[in-house]
Image (cartoon, rainbow, N blue to C red):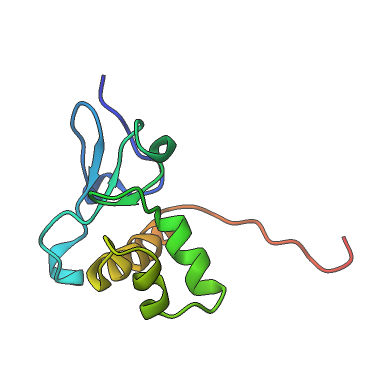
Length: 108
C-alpha cells in the first residue's frame, strides 16, 4: 500500500512504500537533499525535519511565539538553520495546495 500525503500536490512528493518522503522543489528552494519527511511511526506521521523528531509544526509555533532561530537551535542541537528554513518552505508550499479556506465574517 502506498502512503499518500494530502497537504502537498503530487508533483512535490516521492511516494514509496513506508514513510512519505517530501522533496522540496530544488530549483525554487535550492535544497537538493530531502529535509522534511513524514513517517507514520514518527510523531504520528506529522512532517518532521529528516533524521529528527522535530516537527514542522513545533518550529512554526516557536517562530510565531517570537523565538529566534538561535534560540530554537540552542534548544534543539540536532536541528540546523537549513532544517528551519526547510520547515518554513514546507509550510509555504503546503499552503499553496489547492485548498479553499472559508472565512468567517465578524458578527456571525
